[in-house]
Structures are given as C-alpha cells and as structure tokens.
Image (cartoon, rainbow, N blue to C red):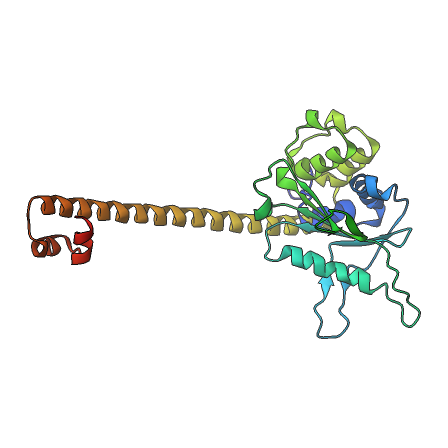
Length: 298
C-alpha cells in the first residue's frame, strides 16, 4: 500500500471526483450537493438516476461528448456535472455544446410536441475565468436566457452554473450554510487531517469516510495514484509555463526599459551638442541619429 502525505483524496482528480459523486453507493452525496446548489429554484430533488456519460452525435461525423457525470431526476430533468481542472480555450462553448445532447435526446420521432425537460450544466472549476478575475468575492455564476432590455427571464429550462473554486476562501468559522460547507469540503478536503467539528453532520461524515485513502483497496490506491499523478503533472506544467511566461515578460520589459533609457541618453547628448553649436553632420556621425531626429530636438 502506497503512503500518501494527504489523509483524504483530492476531489479535483478524476478518480476523487467520481469516487465522491459518481458511484451508486454514494448517490446520496451527489443528491445532497445538488439540492443545496439548486434549492431556491428546484425545491427538493428526491431521486437521481445515473445516465450513460458518453453521448454520440447524430451521425458518425459528429463530435461526441463525454461528461464527467450525467444524471436525471425523478421529473426527467437532466444534470450534467463537469469538473474542469485547468483553463481551456472555449470552455463556455464546450459547456453549451454539451447541453445540446440532453436536449436532442428528448426528441421523440413523429409524436414529439417540442416540450422539453429542464437541462442543468454545472461546472466546478479549479480556475478563474479571465473576465471574472476582478470580482474576487463572486465565485458563483448562474446563467440563463434573459431579455437584455428588461432583464427578465426569457427561458427557464436551460441553466448553466459555474463555480470558480479558487475564489471560495471562507474558513471553517465563516461557514454559514450547508452549501458553504460543501464548497469548503471540495476546496479543502485533501488538506485536512480530520473532520472539523462544524462539519459533524451525517452527510459529511460519509464524505470523509469515502475519501479516506486508508480505506481503499490496493486497486483503488493504484487508480487514485494514477489520477493524482496526472493532476499534479498538469498543474506543474501549467505553473512552469506561467512562471516562464512571467520571466519572459519581465525580461522583455527590462530590455525595453534599457533600450528606452539608452535612446533618451543619446537624445540628451545630441541636444547638448546642438546647444554647443556643433554641426548636425558631426552629431549624426557621433550619435547615429538621423537629421530629422536631430531637428526634432531643436
């Protein structure tokens, strides 16, 4: 059995996320999370069914979609739950594309009257959108079709919820709601070595029991190790790229600054020579400036 520094799994690994939310035995965890997430709009979801997470297009040439989690409640409403570890170009486009699959699959040949069940796409993000970085206190975004002028809801059956987890920085003592507690667990689970007293509820007791690595079989440990390695390699690659980009930017900025300083220094010398009555030809030869540049200094 491998030894881990952490006592509990990292929910942002593929294995950790699906261990908590994607297994039939832990369906009550996903149910509780969704109920807290959607309480104001949904009421209480009483039942969930896991659906096939690989969705095929209408033809062989269509792009397919593989959801992290895909489920349906007892009213036939669909829920896509996605975990996104890193920034991805066109992620919002991808989320919109994914939402088309549960919409299309509701179509019944010949007898369909176009009435749709609601579709929810929920994205738990381990990054912050560039457009949102100046809103450090806003970590939840609920997106629906709205009329721009009146700001009224136009269509309520298509919902996108984005949770930017790096912005959620509440401490245990600051947790006020059950939803706060869920976000705290997702954000900090692998950093904890015990269950905080404020989380002593049956649902969170089960979360911590499910996430405790010491309870895993050898096969589960190996699967988690592979998933954790992929997660860390991805993070390290991104951190390295970010650091190199920063160094490159600083180096480029310093170079520009030096070049600008030299340019200003040469102009100052040329101006001094002009004031001393030295001919433009000699100044051009001494400084490398053009006649027009020297004339502009007069």
